[in-house]
Every structure is written in C-alpha cells, then in structure tokens.
Image (cartoon, rainbow, N blue to C red; front, side, top):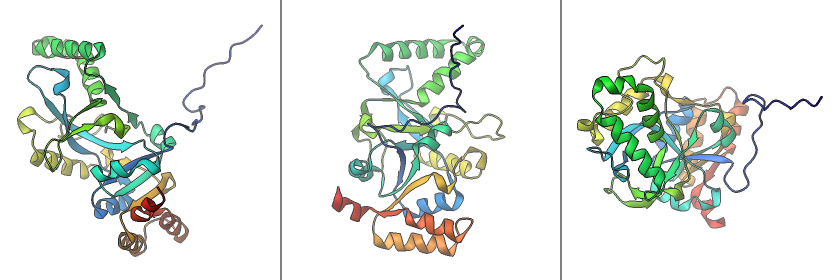
Length: 271
C-alpha cells in the first residue's frame, strides 16, 4: 500500500532562497544614533506610524496609526531610491530569520479592484453595528483590523517631514513587523484614537514601546548580513562605538560585526 508523505511542518521546512527578490530584509533610518541603539540593544523597537486609509472609503476614517517596524525586500544594487526617502543608515537582516520572526510581506491593494470593494463594504458594516452587536462579532472585527495592518494601496500619500508626498508604494517591496500585545501588561493602545492622530502622540506612544522590551523585535548578530552607513566618518564612528561599548560577547564577534559595515558613498560607485 502506498502511503502519502505527510506535509512538512514549519520546523521541518527549509528556507528556499529567492531568485527574483532579495535574500535580505533591509531596515533604513536617517540617523547613525538610531543604528547604534539597534546594535547596542540587539533589537528593533517598533514605532507608531500613521497610515492613510482613505483609499478604503471607510466612513469617518481616513487615517490610522499603530505600532510597526518596516523593512524592504530590495536588491542591494537597487536601494538608492529607497534610501533617498528613508535614510542612509541601515541594517540588512537575513530573510530566513525575518520569516521565522513572523515579519510579513504586506498586501498591496488595487483601489479599483473588487477585493478593495469587498473589504470596504465589510469594514463599514462592522463599524455601523451597535457596540453590543460588534462585541458579538469581535473575532471578525479583530481579523479585519489585523488584515488592515498589513495592507497598503499600490500608490498613495504618506506622512513625512515634507508633508504628504505621493509615492508608488509597490516599489518599496515592504515587509512589516507588528508587535503582539497578547500577554503583555501595558496601557499602550494597539490603535491610537482618532482625536489623537498627530506626531506628538505618535512620539509619546513610541517612547512607551521603548520601555517595553516584550514588544521589541530582537535578534542575534548572526542574523545581520549588512550594516550600511553614509560615509567613512560614520564607519569610523560606528567602529569606535562597537569597541568602546564592548558590543558582542567576544572580540571575535566584535570584529565580525565590524566586517559587515558597508559605506554607501563607496557602494554607489559600483552600482
């Protein structure tokens, strides 16, 4: 008798290296100090970010803010445009590691699609329900909200220091980490109230996350594939920081970490 082989579990399955996308998830920022903090803490702290959701036509809601940490799935030689928008300091982490941490590629939505229409209709129906009725359907409400956390239009507006520029989001190949508040004692909201949607609130609540290590995205140094800085002065400063703060468990680990530092201005000459 032929016996069908059981499907592999998550523990049994191996990572199939992609051929059309990067093997690394890059996290970029606009200050060297932010990169230092990540390396020192061996963790990325999610922050509250504003997302425009006017494309969904949800009655009375055109934006939402919740905690996340964003990564891009872009080949090293195509990062220039992305870095111009998000900063010249970055960390490249193994995609295999990221998948095991639950980092999720987001779903880009065509605003003209039936999928968008269906989602909007269901979300509006849930929001129109009386509180008592909505409580009865909490599992569906929570699922829709969680789904929303990993959605973005193909193109649209986003908040920046320069206002709300229009961008092609699909070019960013975004993956997203959303911290789980389950089993974490905190007064921090998963979603910021509509009347508090402003940069001051985002910063205040993000500061709250910085005090809750349970909500951080932690890693070991072996997960790091690249550390990117803007110029040679930054490289020198980061090396001194790693040595002065005795980052790592051993001198070998410190030297290995230093060997992963790449200078953007030099990389650009070969792209």
